[in-house]
Length: 232
Image (cartoon, rainbow, N blue to C red):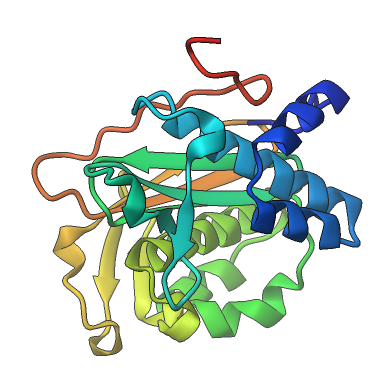
């Protein structure tokens, strides 16, 4: 969901959906862009999930694991429905799957975060060598393609920043990307599918998924604003 047209009416509609803790967090934001991103992504997940189950957006309840990953509260007795959220300047995203290990991350292509300083902490030696040989927008896109895919993997695993992401090496010279894991990751790379999407001209979206059976199939959908429930 692009945030360009997230107007006052949509913001008011989203506010009405929030739980008490979500509203408290919303009100605590000092940054207006961060507040709007939080509001939009909470509205997005609620209205999106209601398209898959007969639960109205305001009645969804969520919990988090000890690393902060959100999931549908067990009290709702919902099975076979899982999600991952991400938000950044200008865009919020919600990935929905029938399996638990799904992760999404989004970043603007022009974000200035000191890429050269971050690269040693997040890239394998081979990834870093390729990054340092690039310049301009290609260098930016390479960085954020890897960054979003690795962040999506971390989210899908649901164990927070304890994963040493520079030991997750991704080969972007093939399509779709292929992953190689160091021993520190303690996971089988062959379980995972990675996809990088340019859903807008300004953002890069990374998706990581461990599909229990079959191939990963992605169906992108863009909303102009937070959608009402189907029966509204």
